[in-house]
Amino acid sequence: MLRTAALDTQLTDLLAHVGIVLFYLVVWGLVFAGTALFVGAFIPFITGDSLLFASGLIAAAASGINIWVLAIGTGIAAFAGDQVGFWLGRKYGRPYLDRRGGPKTRKAIARTEWFYTTFGWWSVVIARFVPWGRVFVPVIAGVGRMGYLRFSSANLVGALCWGVGLTVIGYFAASVPGVKTAAYVIAGVVIAASVVAGIRAWRADRASRSQTAAAEPR
Image (tube, rainbow, N blue to C red; front, top):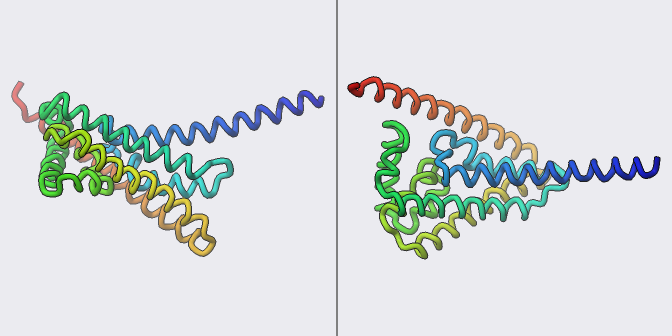
């Protein structure tokens, strides 16, 4: 009986740790895919600011989640995602961008090109906080042959400010008793608004692509 009880305790602890590891991996995977795989172009609410802030809130509420492991891992995932986007833009050039999405996405790419041309190094940092910029600036920087070290330095600063910063802000917002309730309300509103905006953008992009495909001669 004692051995059985000990085994049950070990299994419970193992499952608890697996759950925590899975939480880390899901958050990091979504942050990475948001830019590296263009997921953020179509469902920004899953890979953007809301995810980071909410993950910080969850880390504060759930036992066993280490905020610094979560935040630093998020920063690394953000950095790696942009590096992949930059490499793809540098390797495959403008045609790689031209194949992304329909007219709505192409308008976002045009805005991002202006943004990159105007702000240069700073565009990589600032773009972290702009949904369409976060997705396309790394690729456009690669297409524009921005220096590797120059891009990497800007990417590092952006990943720290955005990936680590927003996650930690969410955590401490929930940890302070005076603002805990307000933080959850704000997070809920932001997440709900992001979900609605993301679904509308995704549906609009699909409709634009369908109209374009129907208008093309066969």
